[in-house]
Length: 191
Image 1 (cartoon, one colour):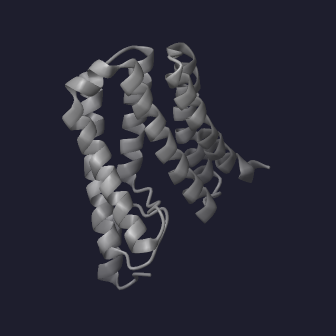
Image 2 (image 1 turned 90 degrees about the horizontal axis):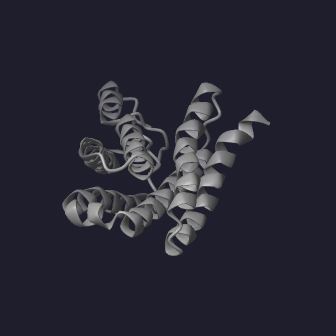
């Protein structure tokens, strides 16, 4: 039963995304926040549970990537609806995050025919920082330092994944990062 929990949390995030979009569309900020915060926390929980109990799987990596993507778009839509001043005043930062993420995903689809699902340490840190920024924005208000920390780490993570796309001839999930791949290449253990 435990082995189902990480994927169930990812599926719950997938299902939460259209609910969040609907709540934003009708302007219900309070309900949006009440659905968003647990969804963001479940993003942390599914990975921690999967790693702690050695439950990582190809399906789990795919579900997590889909859930992250949908939650990202639902969060951006919610920010656009409920905090338009953040979008307007920090459009360049938002464009950098979404643009670099979109570029990486387009390149992954072209290279592998699927999302990369690398889940590098940098992309995990970016996801946590973005989640913290969004959660804090909706619960406590705008914190510029959180935004810019999330933007910097997100763009760096997306750039790292673009380099990984060039280095990894076949799709792999759960790649620690560029440093580990370079070590594998030097050791001649590239799979």
